[in-house]
Length: 150
Image (cartoon, rainbow, N blue to C red):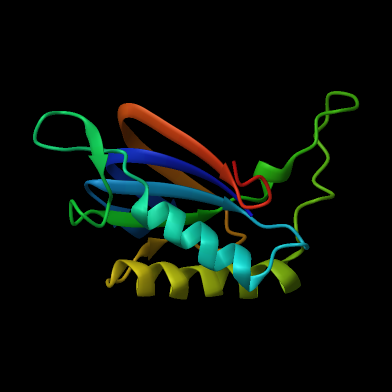
C-alpha cells in the first residue's frame, strides 16, 4: 500500500457536483492499493498515519499527531500512485489492483482508520471521477509505502 499524506487546513472531495467528504484541520490521505497488500499492511499503515507526528506542538515543533490535535482524516483512493513511468511517456498502472481486490482492502482501511482514530473518517468514492480540493498546511507532504518500511 502506498499513501501520500498531506497535512491540511481544509480538504474536500466532490463527485458529480456533490461533496462526498470534507474536513478542516487534519490529513488528506491518497491511498494506492496493489495485489500484494494484506491486512498486515492495513494495520501497519493505519497506525503509522494516525500516529505520525507532523502537527505543531505549543512550541511550533512538529511533534503531535492528527489524533492528538483532534483532527480529521479524508481518505481518497488513487490507483495512479502505483504508476510505472519506466518505459515511454504513458504511465502503466499494471501494479495497481483491480476493483475486485482493491475495494475490499480500501473498505478495510476505512474501518481500521476509524478504529485507530476513534472517530468516523471522511472519504471519496472508490473509482469515481473525484475533484479533490485542499489547503496544504506547511506544506507538509509525506509518502509512505507499506512495503518499504524505512
